[in-house]
Structure formats: C-alpha cells, structure tokens
Length: 75
Image (cartoon, rainbow, N blue to C red; front, side):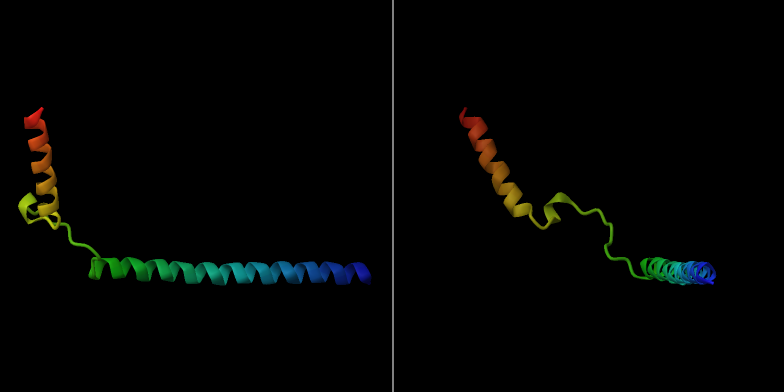
C-alpha cells in the first residue's frame, strides 16, 4: 500500500512537471513571434551614411586633428 502511494505520487509529480514544461514552452514561442513582428514594423535604428562633416562630434574631432597637426608641424 505504501509503495503504491509513493509510486502514484512520483507519477503525479512527473506528470505535473511535464505539463508545466509544455505550457511554459508554448508561451515562449509566442513571445519570440511577437518580438520578431515588432522588429519588422518599427526599426530601433536607421542605418544611413552621412558625410564626416555632418557627424555629431565633428567640431570636437576637427579641433583635436588641428591640434595634432600643429604639434606634428612643430616637430
């Protein structure tokens, strides 16, 4: 009697674990599908070539290049 109860308990826990695993994996697949559809409709960044003069930090880079050129010419 005691062994049958232990065996039934083990089978019940195993069945519960498998059912839980299957339901969790089902939700993960839907999440991946939703994220991939979001990426297709609204891109987070736009890849675009711009001239160096129009870059955000052009003034800082240009001033540093100018300083380096004066140092090189003085040597």
